[in-house]
Length: 411
Image (cartoon, rainbow, N blue to C red; front, side):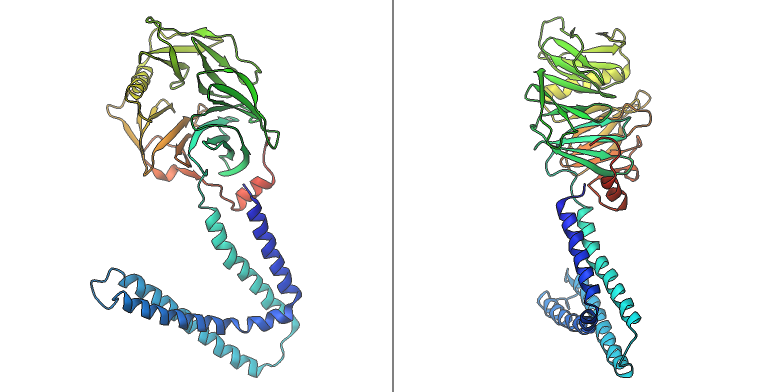
């Protein structure tokens, strides 16, 4: 998303360009000193690197910094030589041609302006295009508009909206949230619901500073995709449909021992897994406005239940989701998938940081969203391949710039 710093940077370069063009005579005079400045700086850098090389014992064959020092030294020599050659030819031409046409001076000023934008703009764009997805750990993800958009929420309450087709950030809001928040978004991307500290808050994103609309207390939330969610409220489970203003009537989800329900997860398609305080679990099937125990759970349901039960028993930070007929599990920096036809887990990703949040799209051919600390990655293929991953990092290249000027949809 374009920030105030980006606008200030562009305005500054535009002002410098206008100043160079309006004061063309002075600019031409200043440009005459550029080869001399480059020559002097290159010579000084060469001398300095020689001193640094001697201090680092660069003449010793076993020196670890010899290659780096020699490379920098070669670059500085080339720069110095180019500067002195340019200064020599400039002096020679100035003696042979005292006066030049005005159009030629304008041409030189135009080239200088283009070079200035390139020299100053390239490092700034490099910096902006390599920022983190968030400034804090990502705690919740939610798709909207058939997985065209992705909402991400971090532990500081910063909510971002991403356009996955353009691979750019197109919205940002500051919400009241916590480190253990969960979230789901309306399918039309006009609002998000955040469960934090037992309170479900609705944020309508048409407001620049969204204020929460509070709803009854809930224990847990499971994003079902398509704007639907399952809310655990004590001994009942309620379904919140996309486009509705209130949750539907609740369904009892108790087990035989009378243990309290603690969490709900939407792992496989069309089913919910409820875990209880006695570390047991039940699989429920939902659809057509009904919720009832699944009498004959398939292999994926049973595998997901076993993984969730092990997570609860070990108190690990594992995350689980369902994506393209695969149960995807994260354990630390490792991501792997489970499929009925595969005897062993399928390796998907191995990162250097802990993967905290996973969300598989329920849309046909939709992606997998991965929250690894403060970074967000989008994966498109069920295989160990980093080529199909997209890093969401607030890029402001031309597509991202146009996306922010003309954002599609709401926000």
